[in-house]
Amino acid sequence: MTRADTHEPENAVLREVWRDVLRRDPHQDFFHADVRGMLRSIGPVLVEHPEYADVVGRLCEPERVIVFRVPWTDDAGTVRVNRGIRVQFNSALGPYKGGLRFAPSVDLDVIKFLGFEQVFKNALTGQDIGGGKGGADVDPKTLSTGELMRFCQSFATELARHVGAAVDVPAGDMGVGSREIGWIYGQYQRLIGYHEPGAFTGKPAVLGGSALRPEATGFGAVYFTRRMLAEQGRDLDGARVVVSGSGNVALFAMEKVIASGGTVVGCSDSRGSVAEPDGVDVDALREVKGQGGSVADYAEKRSNATASDGSAFTLDCDVALPCATQNEIGPEEARALVDHGCWVVAEGANGPVTPEAREILREAGVGFGPGKAANSGGVAVSALEMQQNAGRERWSGEDVDERLQTIMGEAFDRVRDAAERYHGDPTDLENGANAAGFLRVAEAMTSLGVV
Ligand SMILES: NC(=O)C1=CN([C@@H]2O[C@H](COP(=O)(O)OP(=O)(O)OC[C@H]3O[C@@H](n4cnc5c(N)ncnc54)[C@H](O)[C@@H]3O)[C@@H](O)[C@H]2O)C=CC1
Ligand SMILES: O=C(O)CCC(=O)C(=O)O
Image 1 (cartoon, rainbow, N blue to C red):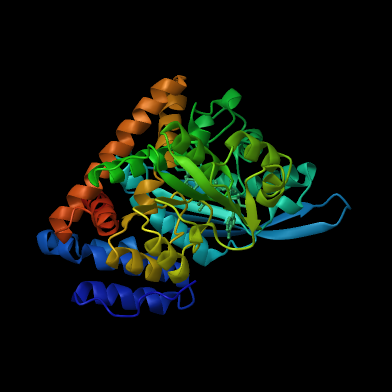
Image 2: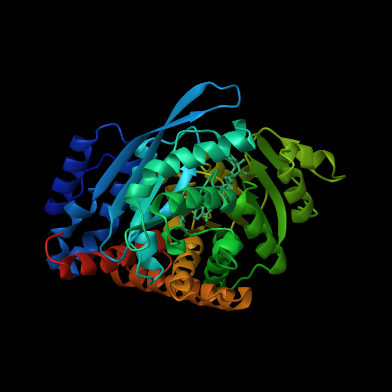
């Protein structure tokens, strides 16, 4: 991770908070970079709302950090151990809410960064949900189905005592889909002895999972992108779009891009990228990925696709949707996007564009949609799943999609208005998202007293 901007904030309160954050956890670079971005954005908010100054220090300290052992037995009978983490960051607006990530790169720094993002992202959805995040340092791709289920059950055995529909409501993230959430929820239910479907979201439909939850993050990112383009007098019809990744978020983002008239000219996975000027066939890609293949395997089946080891973001495109993981677009990729005349970059993933790359895009006038707003559709539909579970209802895909479009439109308006009000530039969506998210959480925290 690129280290955070080390310039100290000018505002004395923010400077003190920043020093405390660096002193408490000196090696958490991902978390630091995210906090630094937030502190940069909220200076002007504190001028209008000095009453929120004493909230900032508390906001940067998680309410609770849970680190636990996950013991399990592999198919050879060998006992193995991983580390599980749940960071319950902020519950001012509602139960902690946020995904679980299974990946070898999971550590406390990454989970704190994602949890901090989640607090403000969730606030931007307008739903009553706090922020949290969790996961384990396991590579699910290396486990058999049986091993992964046993792993999920062991993970859930400890997690169970910390979650609940009114307490903390986990969902999926990288490496955790509806199948894994079903297994985790299954173990939770066995332990507590009754049905409580609202304790997890992103469940399989048969267990009370919402229609459109799998699609929601990718679809929502495209709805947000369409609003960004509309502000520029453009749309996706005829646009050439690069979407990185080929997992949950990426595949549904590609589907919605194509449904909106765009062409997906490139995609990627952790092993490489593919250029396909005539357009990626999402069904064919999904089939290859579903069989454990790579984007290179997909390219082999296509007459006009070229695989490479490099980044998808050096391809010529009008719109870039990084939907894989953090730090995918650094200075080199940002310069390539600028050179190709890219209009808009919107983050389907969490933290895929580094601070230096964002600066390059900003200076070149390329529109930037920050993840805490652009990818908030997933958690927004998770909140709708909680609502359905609480009311014992099931809404249709059309109904959920209509609500998702409304939520993404309102989030865009909130972000743009805050960008204009506090930073004098309605296109500065990064500062706008931080300012608007902060305002809602700060108001809730202040209303609760000193919490
Ligand atoms: N699943 C959800 O609802 C939400 C996910 N996100 C974020 O979206 C991103 C993707 O999540 P999912 O699609 O759920 O995960 P996933 O596990 O379904 O897919 C991840 C994809 O990224 C690829 N990938 C990993 N490292 C890569 C690299 N260095 N370069 C290129 N590709 C790489 C993988 O091969 C895979 O295709 C993550 O940052 C996640 O935190 C954000 C909001 C909600
Ligand atoms: O749906 C959720 O609760 C989690 C979504 C998530 O992890 C995210 O927005 O990054």
